[in-house]
Length: 171
Picture 1 (cartoon, rainbow, N blue to C red):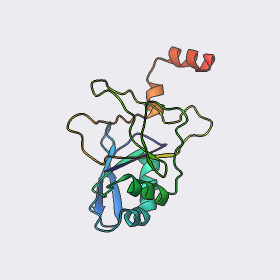
Picture 2 (tube, rainbow, N blue to C red):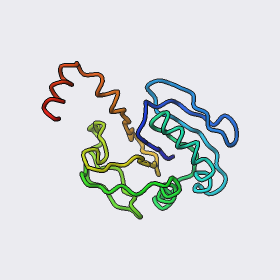
Picture 3 (cartoon, rainbow, N blue to C red):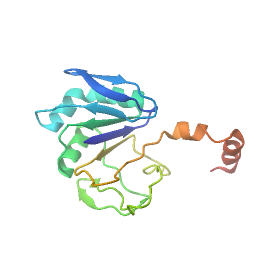
Picture 4 (cartoon, one colour):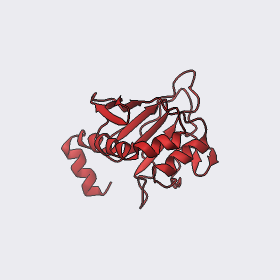
């Protein structure tokens, strides 16, 4: 399973309607989910569907791809390269991570009994990633949820007075 997260709008549930065509089905409040059954190399599937994947990201903000066959960090690095994006440098670590290969790192180490609040990878840096790739290489026995949040939507929910004072204070 691989998860693509890009800058954009709230996600929708997605399915592959026909071979070679990726068609989204909107389900509010859920990440985009794309079930695939790729028989060839993962990177070839990415190359074939690169424009469709970018269009889904632009339209929905996030896409969860199941069945693609990402088996190790090297395959994820190859997927990233096919998506034409650079590795993200961890300039403001949220939690300790293990470095695997070619810019691929583990999830943040976090106590299993504590929920992890949504956070933004290098969001306060001068440059930030336009695309993040996450992969689940082994299914956890329990937990393991990754919360995705749309910052634009989250920032629109607090009362106007809070947003105004935050903007005035520069936070």
